[in-house]
Length: 240
Image 1: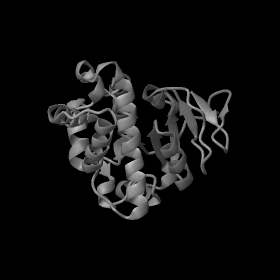
Image 2 (image 1 turned 45 degrees about the vertical axis):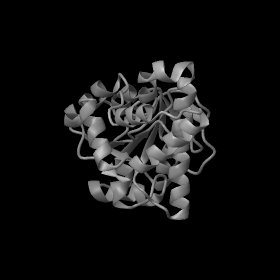
Image 3 (image 1 turned 135 degrees about the vertical axis):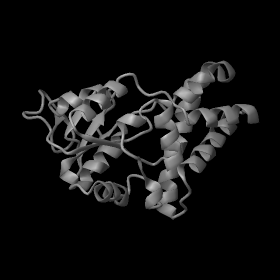
């Protein structure tokens, strides 16, 4: 893990002191849950193109959340997930209702990354509050945490449904502050989506970017407090 300077640029060496916070919030999709796992499970039906299919599905899913937020046409994340899947299937010339149904069903039961359960257990064991702050609807998030056997390691999820706008709108991050009744600077927000980490930091959260793929830093306002290679690094970052 590395710390970051005021522009989010990695700086050699660890943080000089453990990150002192009261609660740890996690983005769900792409951070705790592998969004490509639904397509991977259907690789026999999608063929060797399944990674490209999964990438397009995810990219359109995010684009639709941003565009719906900008235009004021909110629908819940389950609806957006279906719309973006339909786009991906049209792009890949796939007219297969059975495959669509299977992909949507499996999106409710995505694989958790391997280091997630132990990291959450360490945080909870140290008395830290842990929860999701996600675009996902409450029913999606409950299904995902139950399917990955993480429900006992997380407080009830905080969903954007409550404010009817998607990340990275500031109302979403404010929702977390209000629900936790905790100042932003006492909340560690962990996301594998760079734009989410940067925007959470710009709001005032102690953001940590999970950079699994060695992506370049973002050119956005704000900067994460630290950059880690996996969720498993987060407890150590907090001195646990």
